[in-house]
Length: 223
Image (cartoon, rainbow, N blue to C red; front, side):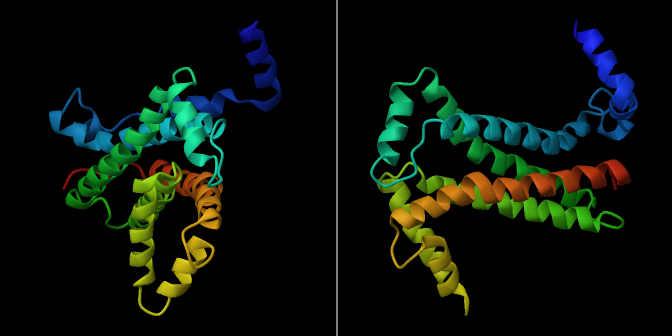
């Protein structure tokens, strides 16, 4: 049945050449762990993307139960943690994955830097990679407030003060993030919207550009 369905779609859209072009793409020898043990350092980018996919999928599950208001936010997380089947596992994956993805991205950035992969003609991809790094940090910061417990509240207040200390524009950044003069209901709603809608949209766009340039330029060789 699936083969017949695939053939029906392929006859109309000719999808086979598209996925064959990706599947038949040869991996350079210097990034193949079967040939070089040091090639494992080239896996950090792929591992970062793998964890990102887990973050997206687990986050979609969490939004089915999370309530982004100051009255119910904490209780919705508590309900998810203790009442929903496998809720504690999924939330744990999302919680620890948020830290792990930053670690893997940092290692990936170090690999790119020390192998000189940021040099011509890959400067634009380096810039896009740095933007992805900052978006990931933003996702971590905005997601930290969502449980709405004491740790999340006071950590966000510290983060707000740091943002407010930026010369000239710090006050505007702080007010934009907080939605007012205090960390309250408007802040939680804003952080939820930024965390779930705005930053993921930017992230997916940057990832598409990142992969397109990798595909176009290829994986850089060792120094």
